[in-house]
Image (cartoon, rainbow, N blue to C red):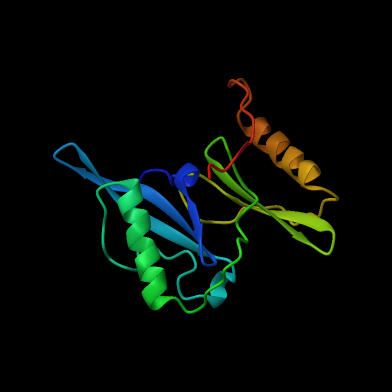
Length: 153
């Protein structure tokens, strides 16, 4: 599996749809997707890979397939956007959450949906993002500097 295309992820009804290139056929890319559920492992689709079992010919196509599957089979629906504060840094996905005035984060590496976040609380979103950036910059010493970019809407 290639890296997860977090920069093309879409939040939809309480899920984050994350496309990736599943493979190639005749020089055409075949896309698949993974899901994160805002309610975590309480959802049957949390961290599921392509529960629709249908592949797409483009990122837009696979997003549409995932949305249709969520509409038909989801075990919960949320109209809010709990994934609105998500960022991509060095191909890592960072989701910042706030609860009762405190901030924390989920951190997913480029190739798999394993949350590797430190159990730490922060006073602000900026403080949280700065902590993550410092940690990732430490892993990539000597590489060109990158800046945390908000998701594309």
